[in-house]
Image (cartoon, rainbow, N blue to C red; front, top):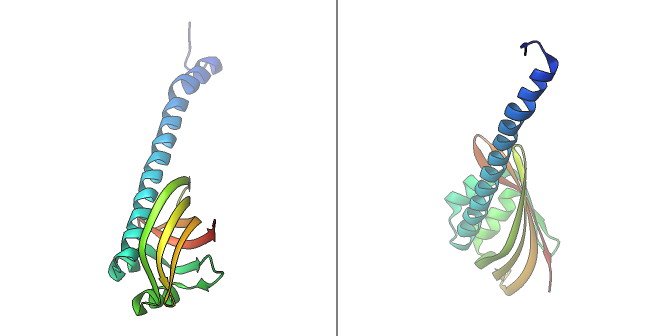
Length: 152
């Protein structure tokens, strides 16, 4: 006879019923976060290549740290200002592979990309490693940090 107070019975219930449900929910959440971040990456690339400053304002975190492959580091206002003035222009950002890791309301996207455009009137066509830190604020993913490293 099995009694509900039996420890072995309760352990079996937890192991066979509750743990698989919790694990499944965690896996579903991780997949959803990965999809959301991949979409956020696409939105960022589309906004900077099309000079959509309204969209970019919603994507960039107010405390953005934007570190270029040249070593220049800009705040949100500095980066947005360079884009608006034409000092920084992206013609294309092509992703060659991205790995996403979620950490609750934060996520890291590590990508290999090719960026083409102009910076201070000089053309660039760089193959880069790019690291983005995304944070979720008010239900929306925002880009909090950007770092690129030249591969060529």
